[in-house]
Image 1 (cartoon, rainbow, N blue to C red):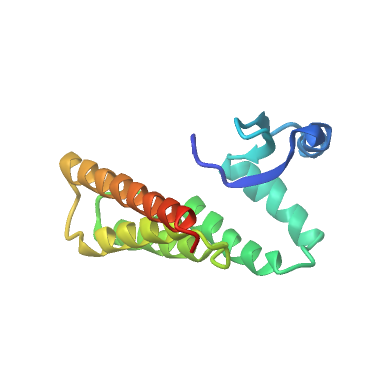
Image 2 (image 1 turned 60 degrees about the vertical axis):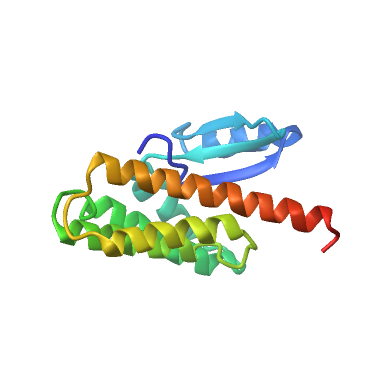
Length: 165
């Protein structure tokens, strides 16, 4: 699951020892990184680690906030990913992937992130339109469409900020 952050905790770079302690608690199965924006993160990416360590921990010590609902949706995503039903060349794999995409688009939906909403809608529409295995060209076209939409939404956001709206 390289390149996909499934669990992440952000803190100011000054709180790096806290993130290192969190990672150590989970047997250093994650990674602690400092991002260019001076935010530090601890990240867990491995599905087995999520299934065997992270999820059981939060089931034993539940979140006492609005994030508990997000956690439930996130657990559903991990479960779907672990099933690997989204992998393959059949339309059932497409449907499983679409289920994951829908759950992902709902995750943290209260945050105002128009870029994420646009990207999710493009992917959902693309998946729903598939009738077979997509070609490399079709995948590249999807990626280009997502990049273009992201740039357009960022440009619109910058225009609204500079116009005082």
